[in-house]
Image (cartoon, rainbow, N blue to C red; front, side, top):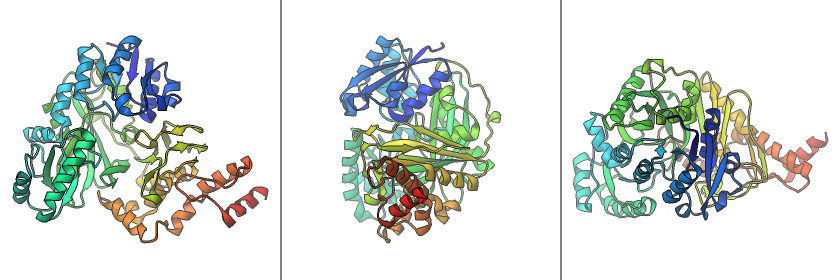
Length: 505
């Protein structure tokens, strides 16, 4: 069945990304929005737009009943959930199926088999995948936690069974820490996911986080599209992603890809999904979890494979077979993605909602920006503070780092704070340039930098000057005082005077 109209059950950059793919395929789009997003780009770019409700997600983007009602009223044949919100909600996927509306993603059955981390670990065992030692069911009590920890040996990691993003996760190095960690992890998991179930696994120290993108059609065919390196994380949340990994060779890539495909096929998985692994120093990899949706970082895979994952998602949902075989997948070049957030790294990563008063977006060869903002847009405080994703592509990793730094220097977001300067710090760091990274790398870098009261190195400050200068020029021409630019302090004193002098000269 060829779709003629798709509803996008999401907001921000991912809703706009899906709309663009639909337009390229000649498919009409239906946007939904909360009161906070009435003037958002994804609303203005859609063919039709419908109000969901007030700003809180529980009254808008998480209202599956309202979204299905709008789909029926608008005549949409399918719903693309993007990521977050309802994208991994098996009940919503089933409700779509019962309503005769195609959910662009896996079936509810496959989602239930792989969406819970404990059930996914059980599925990994059935598929013969290597995984970290530990429990495959939620812990029934603290006594059981003690028992499992003694069996696998400290250090261990407590994790929420129902979610991710670092919520409900606690690292425990000795027995005395387990009781308090167990209580706090359960409480945090309950608040974040509505389920306090937690499980315990062996802590792999200083691992790399490597994930494999898979695609599966509804005819039994499944392929892997190579790996993404997601080791640059802050408190278990990804900050920078790249493809391919600097440490994964062709033999390891094939073994990890085959394991990921085996898991997907054993669960009857269809559409796009990501199997995540931990990789230790010896080259051994361990199953971590499966994300049963499109990932935030999918653009880096698109750039190195030359494939459009959203196009393929839609074609799969229409019942078409995969247009390529495993041997057709070729990785070319290198891509890096930076997640641009409205937050202040110099102030504990405090959120920075508000009006964007100045916006200069980067461009040029090898630069892609997936954005959901514009100059004058008010960033709401009700949702994840992601503003955009900045992606660079080049033939080599060294070149793509240089290209990303150039793009970061062109990027100016005025009126709010952002994490742009954080990426300059990372990309100038010698360990990152040498790919000496693991999941604890960024926390160590931030801890090291905190010893200088949050000040970046002179090299990084110099690298940030073009962005500050760009904002200073525009603010000076506008005549409304000192410049404000994302991720840097307001330009003032002799620096601003010097730049004004440069304008006159």
